[in-house]
Image (cartoon, rainbow over all chains, first blue to last red; front, side, top):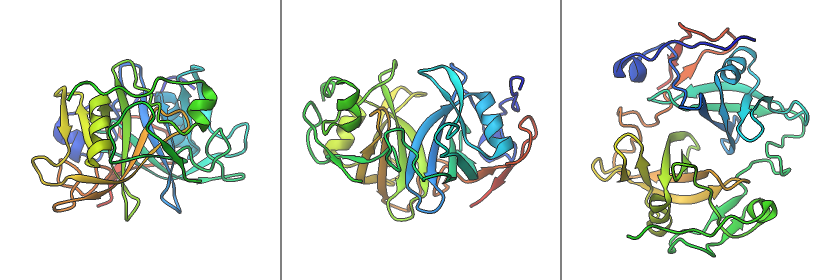
Amino acid sequence: MTTATFAPRGDTRAIEQGDEFQPKLDADGLIPAIVTDALSGEVLMFAWMNAEALALTIATRKAHFWTRSRKKLWLKGEESGNVLIVEDMRTDCDQDVVWLRVSVQGNGVACHTGARSCFYRSVTLGREAGPGLPLERKS
Amino acid sequence: MTTATFAPRGDTRAIEQGDEFQPKLDADGLIPAIVTDALSGEVLMFAWMNAEALALTIATRKAHFWTRSRKKLWLKGEESGNVLIVEDMRTDCDQDVVWLRVSVQGNGVACHTGARSCFYRSVTLGREAGPGLPLERKS
């Protein structure tokens, strides 16, 4: 696949109120992607897409990402079987983030640790932040 | 407030399975924050926090962010009255993202455009990505 090219960015009105997808990729060519479970609404994971991952996700409805650590394109679930089927993809007012509502295939696990969601710990609130601030495991 | 200092990053086991908050800030000193409605589960907005915004959010339970465009700390809702009260804050396996479940005060609007959520448009799926790819307004 050749490098995907999206529409150029328009003015503020086109970006915020327009009906053309004009995604903003950051200085590294990446856009943040929030992934939630289409049924429960739970946030499952957060990752990054480059233009190719974004285009492949749109065309195939299977979530693709760019791993910043391994610097490669990544079809989520390619090895584990936990492919993310995209039911709906939203973008925000600034068109610099995407939100994917997905169905998790396979055994329903989205996190590499084996947890259903990557967000399995809560941060203690109402305290001064600093070393020793506890996390509480939720699932 | 002096610059907030969090626990240093431990090894992979401490980060992924530990019970101490060891957030990773990026090269710009920022961490991404996903904000969802505590009742509906809808993603309301996505923004960035620096260490001070993160510490203030934890201590006060009111969501604070760092605006990259205006380069300043920002109590969300300070002007609009739409303060975000944090019911739960999660971090992910890598501790490099936070997810806030919030109650929106005031008139319940989270987006500067006046929309309840910033994510009011869907991207067309199942098509080749490129210029002209339509967005569909959802609310």
